[in-house]
Amino acid sequence: MKRKHWSTVGMLFLSLVTIQTYAQPNNDLQSGTDYRAFRHPNAADKALIKRIRTALAQTKQLDSSTIFIGAHDGSVLLRGEVQGNDQAEKIVAVTASVAGVRNVVNRISVRRLLE
Image: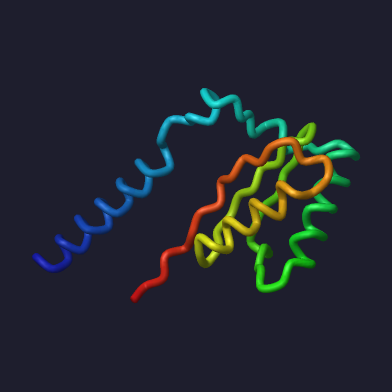
């Protein structure tokens, strides 16, 4: 019985930590980033996203397949997960170098490897 009780307590704790992690206040509204603008790209934004995808695909030793790219009036949102800091930095640098990109909002997280 004790083992089942602690297992339930552990799952409850994990659930609370997960909920609290995702329920943090949206500081992006304070920084001026409105994610709603990235949801419905117009034709120019779609063309910019295509140019960015092409540039990333042509970059050797770079896996950007898990990255969401959004664009709105030259602002680009990058969101997703990569294997290392070098991958994240390279994705941001390549994106920033594409014609038409005015600024990059980097929301890429680095996946931690278990040792």
